[in-house]
Length: 264
Image (cartoon, rainbow, N blue to C red; front, top):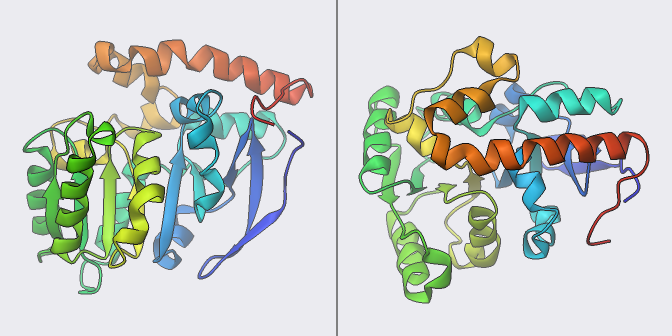
């Protein structure tokens, strides 16, 4: 795929430069601008595991352009943009973004949130913590779908009903990279009350307090993958040991003009 540095225009955000990365791209956008001005649409926070899934999953690949904003949610990917000569201004991770989002809109009654994801009980803990921090019932509903929800039409119907019944205007979906994005793009037309879609992976776990975030120096040094791997070796092995080396090799090939989009 040829490098694409064209700009996208998104209401509230204006023109955003695209920075090509393998067969996807990220927008060059800052955290503060995103929090302040992006209030309607669908956001994708792209990380290494996700971009490697895009090398194999055509269905996922086909919906990338339907997202209004795609951020660089990985310090390794941030370093890669510099290596490629097209640096983005900063890493914008979902777990950093969401606390800033609910703090910014703590007093805005039009911003109500549904948390969809996490193990049973985890989303409820996250909701309690968030509502206590903002001082109101900002999180108006939660759900912990079955692991195999995407192969169960009845479960999907139940999820859609729960989101609609909550009246939420914002839906944070934490159902694993690729799967959560497909759920949003396949079914969001049936949930017209939701104005802002946030597929933010493990953010619900962080907000619940069941998983501790690493110190800032670890994240900024690009070592969050190692921290998570040591904390959850079985859950994180495939993401960080299987996918990281091929990603770095693919980035080198892109730098040398040798990378080829598998779906082009």
